[in-house]
Length: 488
Image (tube, rainbow, N blue to C red):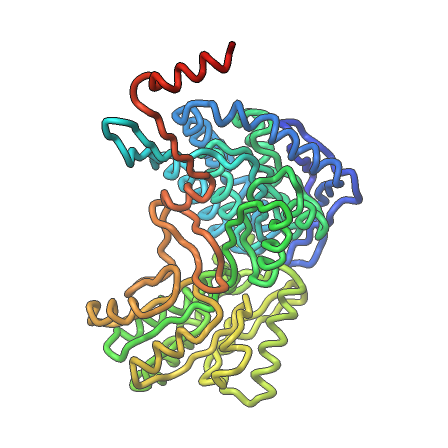
């Protein structure tokens, strides 16, 4: 079904068609083209960046309370159009519509909550001679590059903080899921001052143009680690600041004293929600040997009841992978495990004539050096490994170039917390997983990223420090005399 409407970019507060041949948007559940999206030329990016530079001084000078009010108004506009955005999100991304609506509504609530945070000046010296205050000032123009797995949430995670801290922003949605981003730009036109938020869409050439653009002061990027390295190298040409939220290979350590059925169900969804297209998805299960077989049985029981299909259909819990390239990546992982003779503890078949569908797969005890254990498939295939010794499993969980999230599960939560404190990840959960909040930071260790999103720490990523030193009283008499002499 082709969508009966035109989508336009938002550049300096005005609608804009693309200068280049349009992008074709494919519904991953049907593999049919459903819409076209504008493809920006380099000149249009330059126009958006210059508009952002022109608008930034006035936006930075706008009182913080007014900037917060604008962000809250934007959240309200998004909430009002949640149904439209959710349907569009399912059609271009594939996730079940219920999940899509949750993403849209929660993202709006998220930036509304961020607007409640405060960044205060800090007086660090106040003596007889001077007052020194550490202030936070905007960076300038932010370039935001958003992936296709959570295109609404991850866009607003950048738009909200940038605007709240006095920056202006140019947003680039993924070419795979451009439509929701374009609609966000449309909704912002009568709320956000012209130039403060532009939305440009384009092909693979647009991201490198942005990261190397001398008019952009910061790049906020969410995506793969390999792409993140290229983003960082490109941004270094102009010493643009970067926040990089990159890949993960999150371990879950399951101790033998858990409620096996309940924990297995929670971790099933931690692994496979959003068809595992989630940087914080659980991607390695370490289950104690005493409960390994029982745990596998309960994972299979949950998997047997899962409904996979077109996200627009009622009751569907897992949709397709978002694009053919990712579908082929996951098929390669499955084929590699099958050729090696790994045990498939869970394998949910799918029966669809079209669409990028892959059912959940759990592979039992693959080799520790296999790609399935060491890399990030970003799709619904997960290794389940056993352990008997805590020191051993902590070492194995930490033996990764990634360090985004992790979880520990035990009836003895104090013991679980001890284990959690030994894990080298940016967020570690005990007896829960993937719990995030606008009020605390999230980010990676090692090659899972640089910088933080969310919380006050996330807002500070969009600022520079300024130490303001003010000497008390008038200038000293010798200095005044010297100044008068210099004028003669």
